[in-house]
Length: 431
Image (cartoon, rainbow, N blue to C red; front, side, top):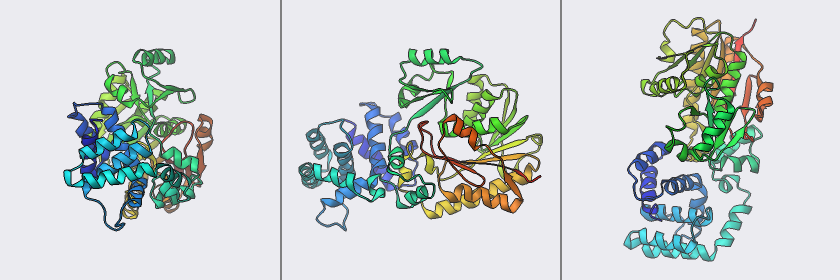
């Protein structure tokens, strides 16, 4: 268990600044981690953050002074140990206790040992309490406000919350003009990537993200795009005519998929970040896509030259609440202030694009299930600008997505396609 101390270091840095991006923080530590199993370190860090609310509850059960948290170093080690004991079967309980006590600062060893030994004595009771609680926020370690948002979509059943509490799945697409489905299967088999085929989406699903990254050269014909993000491209492919402008496009999954599905389209893909745009450029070159032009641009100062676009796609920056399976830190740190700030910015972005492309249709999306960022934005802009909805929801249902229809679009809910949760709306001028 030589990952325990490095995991504590990562978590200590994260808990000192919860606004930090956990994925970027972990990646930085993994780059210099040479002493053991990177997978174990990754699963432990993500697991602790994913179960943070429940872990804090369990620790409080064994504190004499409920109002005073343990010293930070001991607190983090206890979270790791309790995660491994209560929520993971990877290691023997006695080994977890011994390794955790050994890793604790000398003055904290007696306290850490006492808490963990008492946990082992009451382990069955603790597990039963967590399993049978009616507090869904505690049971699935998700902030109460997010549970409320899911209830508004009829997506807060125990199966839905369990879905959002699971480890993520990743989806691999390929350019059908460069590779057949049989060739794609063979390439994944040769690379020994365990995967599940999703026939309706013509892509593959895997939980072995690390193996995919390690074999990037061998899998150069593939790109990663969550099935939820694919849904946006599928809608765009269905309603676009001849030319599409994908703003805030980087790292480019939607443009790539749209270009593969509709090779006759002219696609302009832009982003305000030149650094993120380089990722799109690399993917365009690697997949040999000829129908995408990319450039840096600010949505609010959009340059001339794309007036022919009949569809404008805006996947707006948001809380990313719908991606919490791969970003478990979001389960407990999305605030009302951040939601309201995002919603204001999203309305400004969509309004700016309606003004800039008055003859186009507009496809608005966010990887969020929060009303204020989804239907709240689309409905306010549509009503203010005299826009109407473009119907597309039945097509998504044909692909196998589970949706919640709204006046101007729909929410993607948990489904067998293992998609992130999205809001999608398609708007056009009233005739």
